[in-house]
Amino acid sequence: MKFYLVGGAVRDKLLGINIRDKDWVVINSSYKEMIDLGFKAVGNYFPVFIHPITKEEYALARTEKKIGLGYNGFICDFSNKITLKQDLFRRDLTINAIALDDKGNYYDPYKGIEDIKNRIIRHISHYFSDDPLRVFRVAQFYSRFLNFNFSIYPKTLFLMSKISSSGELLSLSVERIWIETKKVLKNYNIFWYFNILNKCKALKIVFPEIIFLFRDNIKKQYFNLLSIRLLHLKCSTKLNFSFVCFFFYETILSKNFFLNKNFYFLKIKNFCKRLCIPKKYFLSFKFLYKFLLKIFFLNKTKLVQYILDIFYEIDIWRKPKILWDIISIMNIFQLLPLKNKFFFLFLKNYLLDIYNTIFIIKNKYIIKLGFKGIEIGKKLYELRFKKIFFFIKERINKS
Image 1 (tube, one colour):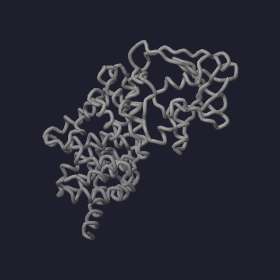
Image 2 (tube, rainbow, N blue to C red; image 1 turned 90 degrees about the vertical axis):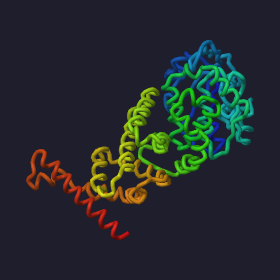
Image 3 (spheres, one colour; image 1 turned 90 degrees about the horizontal axis):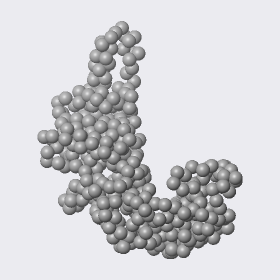
C-alpha cells in the first residue's frame, strides 16, 4: 500500500499558494484494508475514506468508463491492480494530475509541472469530453488563477465547445453548477468565469439571463469596471456581491428600467429559483435592489425621508451588515452617469455615519419618555428624522 498527495494540493504547492485541503490517493489497497486501518468510508459512488486523525480524504486509485449522461454517468474500477498512472489519467487537467510521495518526489506522467511553468490549462486526453462538469471546472480554474496569467489550451477550449454543443450540459444538476459557480464568487473574478463559458457557448445554455454582458457595447464600456474594481472591494456577504453586480448593471443600463422595474426584479427571482441558489443570496440582492431603486428616484427635497424610508425598507436595524454591501456597491455605481450624482456621492460618503447617528435612539428611551403602543414607533421615526436632518444640514453647510 502507498499513499500519494494528489490534485489541487500539489498544484497549489507548485504555484506557491497556501494549501487548504489535502486529497490522497491510495495504491495497492482495498476497501476492507482501509476499514481495518481505522478509516471511515464516506463515498457513495466509489471508495473515499476519512483519515481517523487528520480527517483528510483518501480515495482508492480507480479508473472510469462512461456509460451514461452527466456527471454521474460512469462505472468505476477500484481494484488493487490500478496503478497511479492510470488513476491520474482519468483526471481532467494536467495541472491536476501530479502526485507527491512521502519523500517529496513528484510523479508527473502527463507533464503537469511543465504546464504550470508555462501557465497552460490543458486537458489530459480525449476522455476530457466524457464529463460535462469539466466545462465549468476549467472556467473556474481560469478565473481562480487569473493573476497567474494562465491561458486555456486551444484544443481544450474546442472540447469544451463540443461538450456545450452536445447538449450534455443539460444533464447536470443545477446544484452542481451552483457549487462550481460559488467557488468563483469567493475570488471576485466572476466576470472571467462567465467570459470563458461564453467563449465555449455554455453561457447561453446555463446562464442565458446574463448573455447581455458580452454584447460588444456593454463589454467595452464596463469591462474594467467589472473585472478590476470588483477585485478591490470588500463587503460582508462576499460570496454574492459580484454576482449581484451583474444584474444591477442590466437594470440600470436598460432603457426600460424606469418603465418596468418589477420585470427585472422578477427576472432575478426566477433565475435564483431555477438554479436553486440559496435564499440568503436572493435576500441580499433584494435589499440592494430596493436601496438602489430608492436612490435612482431620489427627490432631493425629501432627502431625509428617503434615507429613513430606505433604512426601514431594508430593515437595517436587524440587518446592519447589509450596509457594508450597499456602500461597496455604491463605490462601483458612482462611475455611472446618474441623475442624482451629488446626493448619490453624499450618501456613499456619509451613509455609515448617518446610521451610527440614529442607531443610538432605542425603543427603551421612547418608552421612558412615556409613549405607548403605536405612538412608540411614531416617536422613534420622528426622532430619527430629526437626527438625520441636522446631520445632513451640518455636512452640506460645511461642503
